[in-house]
Image (cartoon, rainbow, N blue to C red; front, side):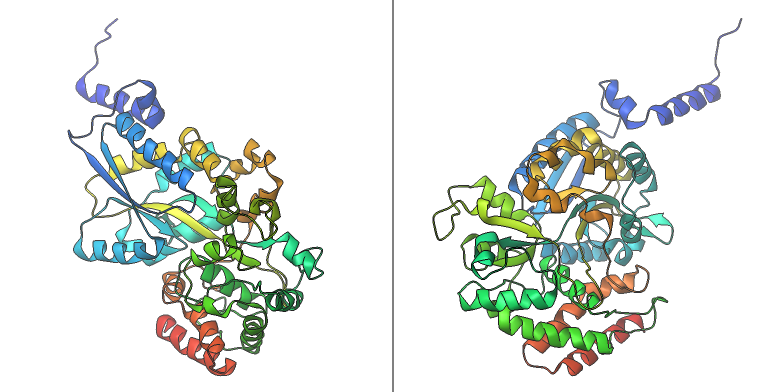
Length: 438
């Protein structure tokens, strides 16, 4: 029997085997894939609010480099600086191979990002499937333009003892109740801390749900008709102007995403919308953060979902993704790196270090034993199951992302807080959205 194989047959069989085994097969073989000698990758990510997780990532860059036969550079910058960096890279057609995307930026940068559907499919199948919202955020015109990585749930961190001191045995169920409790707290010298500034996380996480809770929306379902100028939005703006005056630290207008963390941990505010980074930091440095009575601060922190408004309870959570730039000359290597980084084996130590501040983008991570360790973190466990995204009630779009990037909704409330009548602030926002949506 002739067992010889011609060149075409050999290539066909070898190619099929490689496809079948994929990256896992290559790594199991103990050999780095044959990328060009001196291959390099450059990833830009945010500076994480959980330093322990960044330490895990730093170690993993070396591990991934050895596995893939490449030099991998991890650069961290302030999250508020990522969009200007992406814009500059796209304009010049050169720069980092991969960027850490937030929110729905995949829509905004669609034409400059590589199709990563094969990476998304492989990870999703291995990890129980992605949360539905990831499709809204990363799948643009039927093509995955970024790989979902994690979601930071937005919950209200509050001081149990201070709330009890003004008669609140449990966290308020409605915004009106929260305003009344906050008024008492502010009178005692412990206001609610909230930003109304141009900062990536806490500002949209608070102000978009504030509008939705009264029934306000940016556009109609068609995604074209601007609908923000409504009785519902005006009523929401009027309420939160009063909420700000009655209950909030009025210096918060210019805060970024770190100011409320510092204010809370220094004992000057009683509550704030946030990820769990305040609590995680209080655990990391237990003796550093104490209450007025000398108790360890972490023992006095609880988390609660947003209260309800006349139209219901809504949340916005901050999502994170990895995208490969179209100008990159190392796109295949970048895809293999993302498969490596997002795999269960390598995502798990990063996930555990997060302690629930960031949750996985796939559903399997809700089942992880880490959640059995600390009941204070449980409100974050399933936060990613359902939340609205920018541009409601329309579909996700680049225009919705542009509206966020220009802080139209945040500024609408900020202008009213600074004295502009609510009707005029809403009319201003309508004009800004019309410039975007046409």
